[in-house]
Image (cartoon, rainbow, N blue to C red; front, side, top):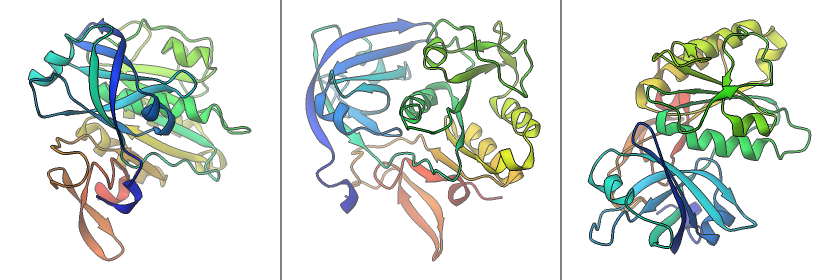
Length: 292
């Protein structure tokens, strides 16, 4: 395990506080895990024991935390045996979690116009990051663009925040972000009301095209989602010459750097290197992972 991760990952017997089911086989799980809540950063994830009879844990991104109350939210989607077992856990149950794991997103003050792009189960780190950014005194609130081809795990509503460069009929937002005074817009190919009918990167390009040169220089992109989406985001960042950080989704066994089962090739000043998504990531500079 990398030195930067020593003494920062905790094993907790977390109590299930609530467990909500949404369309598309999606769930939001809230647990009491005080150490994770205190130390998690946007981009962190947990390695969760889905059931006592299933030894292999599952990596799940952190959606939100409350440092004061000690709870942590996770959004996940039914994919296999592990998440199916996890979906049966009820209020009051105890779940073993290893968290927080990984290097987080790192915003830079010289780019005060953050663009957050999330797709599918890549939405949680973007919401967590938006929550942290809004609490930075004097910082610009981000624009959050989210895409999904299944119903969103929340009841979308028309936004009360107008966004220059985005058509007025593209108005569906995540209510929580609107309540935080953070502009968000939703995209899908499924024809959902108020959503942009296309890929999330197409809407991002439309917004970037609207900015003048000085405004565009202030943009930094943060993204999490499926590999093809991240590849498209990285290409978009290259097109506009923008810094971009991506959180990779990868299968993993131990999640603490021991098994090297989640390695990816990353470009470094000394040439290509194999990095572990769990502890060297999951956040990487997009240009180091996705090359033209």
